[in-house]
Image (cartoon, rainbow, N blue to C red; front, top):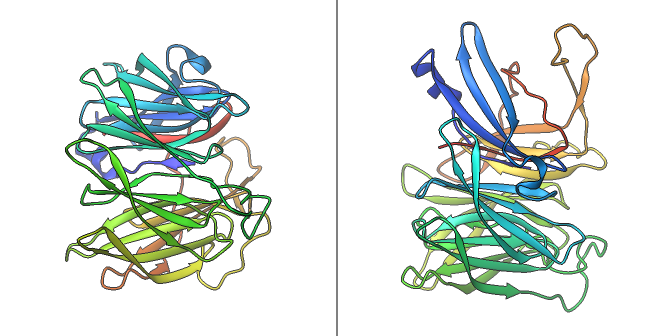
Length: 349
């Protein structure tokens, strides 16, 4: 599942402050949510955008906000179909989304990111082992540019999941010059250089992770001293790794500085767990399919607890890039029910 980050502290600036979020879910489409501060707490309300579950397809897997052009891009993973789609929306004055462009692409797009100062967008395609790039038009719509497709000479360490390359996310580095792509099937981090004149990507290098790791998602951190780290969460090994990043004349050099199970340091991973997401400012990681916690019911009238998957909080040593676990979340602030299986939540920022 994909999250973007924004501090609730920003809501404290005004009692009347309201923040818009957009959420997607398999089989239910895209929802517009409004988070407001009220006396004594917060409220979160929401409704489907116009077009409901059909506006962006059935298997909506990822939402990306283009901060340059105020456009939201939505991808339909389109399992079982020959093509996926990338749909462009304009936010409206009431926080909803208005569709204005849809482009067919290779099947199974699962993540996108805007790069080159809002000039282009790149997508990772999981089941078609591909990467596509798109020119962002003045309207905010898209025009296809490049396709990179990959193959394996033989299945990986875990053949049931590593039968072929599985491109899982596209991550823009802090300098805006490189894209890093975790390939779950090939156990690689693929690194692309950005040509800022043509908007094109060029394959720069690859970094091989431990066989059977299955890198899934990641995020960069540039510290106040200028040091850059890359954090990668691995689904198949249920691990979190950090890498120091060195910029050279030809690309990025990665050096692993930390590795731990994603469920906390020296803590056994629950059976069936699936490491999923990593976001900052603290490093927050999520594990699916564990249900290892019991949380209070969101309905105050119901005392029955709810099984919950895991969110892990890590603090980052800015001098070394190493991590340590850092306590737990406090009480839930607010919740809203969304039909289907949620896949992505982003803020309007």
